[in-house]
Amino acid sequence: MKIHDLITTTEALTELCERLAKSEFVAVDTEFMRENTYWPELCLVQIANTEEAAAIDPLAKGIDLTPLLDLMTDNEEVLKVFHAGGQDVEIIVNLTGKTPQPVFDTQIAMMAISQSEQIGYANLVDSWLNITVDKGARFTDWSRRPLTDRQIEYAIGDVTHLSKIFPKILKKLIKTGRGVWLDAEMEKLADASNYIVDPGSAWKRIRSSGRNPQVLGRLKALAAWREKEAQHKDIPRGRIMRDETLADVASHPPKRQADLAKVRGLSGAWKDNDIGKRLMQVIEDAEPLPKGEMPEKAKRGAPLGKEGALVADLLKLLLKIRAREIDVASRLLTRADEMEALAAGVRDLKVLEGWRYEVFGRDALELVEGKLAFAVKDGKLVMTHIDDMRSSMEEGLAK
Image (cartoon, rainbow, N blue to C red; front, side, top):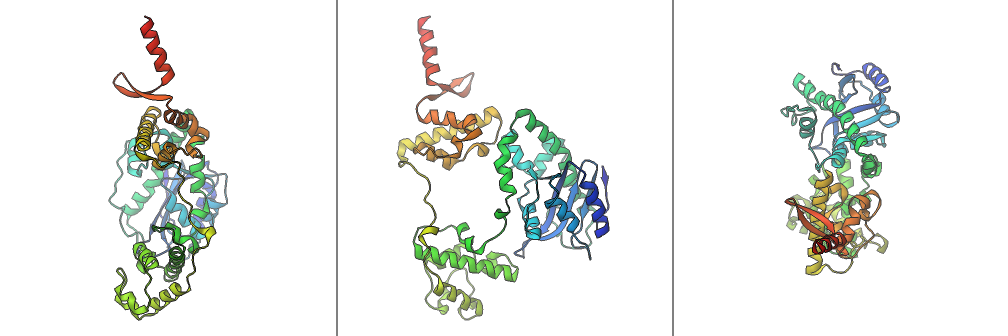
């Protein structure tokens, strides 16, 4: 594979992208900094196909990233391969308003062909290529120039390894017929709405107990205000106010600006500065959350109780057994809250639809309905149908 020098000009980038545009796929990774900013600062882009690899310097003077961004978002003939690519996709969305199309994430794919829930990149490379990744440059300052040869070598290695691993994963997915299992997960990765922050919806990410419309109205207003302040100043939202402080102010709003000095998590200067004044205005203007915006209650059937909790535990045990039997990550099949809902009588669940029903949901439902039981066979815990067990017992007695 040909490894190019660091690309720092629009001309070199254009030539590279014209060649890559003829590929079936490209492996992509980014290095960025966001510790001190609201928006991630893109510092390096690595890209490779099966023949060549390069690192692109977005901070190089005069470079225009348009050829690269067009390849990512407008060329649907080339598959874009990431590993744990959520943050990489977010950067592209911030720059273009669009997600890369089409996309494939090897971390997600591994859930369908192994019991790995969130396999790290180093472990992925070790398991498929038997190569130990040098992590020494991982936490360096990627915004500092010039980049060292070690940094560039480390960064390009991320995509050269990925370009070799992806065809192997794809081959196994085709062999097992599990590619369709990943469709919904890949669609989530490629949904731009997952990355575009709407200040009006920011409150939904904040943990807050209770369903009081007055409190939730203040929470919504405060969260939107914090988001706009952070965006305007380009600093992390937590630097404005931490989630727990925001939730506390929404629940117990200060009556006067001077009271802000008593709020845990806020600087005492807020009692008489401009940002404190803006905060108090938001609290004063906040309206109760409309009925149509109230968060939905979690799906529940009858209260679980002690017996229901035991059934939920049995379902979770069944999940572990099935995931081990078919070598798949249990998280791809279902989650604990769905198991509890199933035990409580809820039937409108993803685990009872499509391929999940065929692979696991049918047996889970039969366990709840008393048609399935646990048994020990050859020292291993397995599932057996009650009717099959009864027939075996009857045959044994007949002999």
